[in-house]
Image (tube, rainbow, N blue to C red):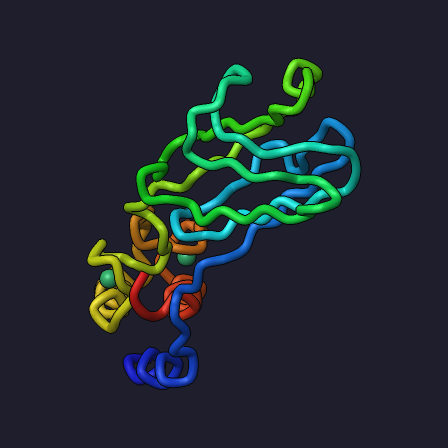
Length: 169
Ligand SMILES: [Ca+2]
Ligand SMILES: [Ca+2]
């Protein structure tokens, strides 16, 4: 069993990559209403119809963190989630007319910057052999901190989950 991690690690050496999260405007809606994002991810709003924009800020009031147009002349607005937003729920809205008053607002749920990487058992912001060793040391135990796949015990599924996030976070 002890040789298995070495074998798998060499064939699954994948880095953690930032993702692009697409939010679609349609009428007075942004969809999804609550989007789960991480620091470093690109949030990409895509226009469908009408004249709109995307402005950060709660209660229909701009706070200046991000702003972009969303209309036929500018159908896409992209924003890279800043580290300062880690762990926060960020409200944004449309500033055109009374759109926000009509309910044209939505949320970005920004993940905690300290837990971006489920395979990082020892919390050093990278998935390495040290994390594999921690898993093996607790093999078969009931340990929520090391049960990456939530199966109840530390087992093969956690090894796979860890290897899937191999590399720096
Ligand atoms: Ca680690
Ligand atoms: Ca498990």
